[in-house]
Length: 261
Image (cartoon, rainbow, N blue to C red; front, side):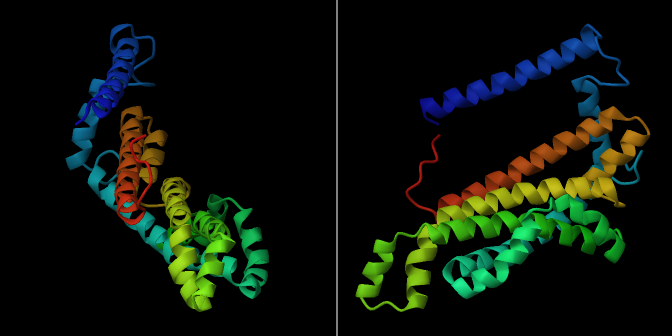
């Protein structure tokens, strides 16, 4: 680890330690907040390890909730990539497809993803299907938008050079336009991942029988802030982990970008 990275690592660790110290001081030492409203960090850690192996008080262990949320979120996310990215590329590359799909897409993108949840629940119940469709809609929009912008940003001179060397329209798309748009497409995938993860947690709070959002909602009703905080921290950790994994994929696919910042 070089000095620059070590410096950033030390600063990050220090900020976390300071935050935990202030939290512990305000709750366990000075008791500025009631434990029933905001438990101290030690209590939260104990609750975390307890929830790993115990189903109380919400009917499932933390690992079961994590698996439920990740399974549905990743299914919806994969579907949003499979459909959203090709749709955005085709809309940008083909004028007829753009004219055909844009009116419907412009209408759909104006509706928040979570607003689809009640309708999907009425149509499909509170199972995987309703949450999956809601997540798919939320994740598809940034995929389409970024793929569309990326293809449109392709420089005309690059297409002209390819055309001069006898490239077909199909070759120009796959050899010039898509490689040029790849950073935009990856950015869309990043935004889509965040949208899918937020939507699954919110959808589970609306109507679900398992998942991290369900756990938080159940423990809100029985006034268990320690379990709520465990759920919140787990959501943040998993979201950061998924983003880091996507960053590794981005570094493998997109060359020549600065990742040291």
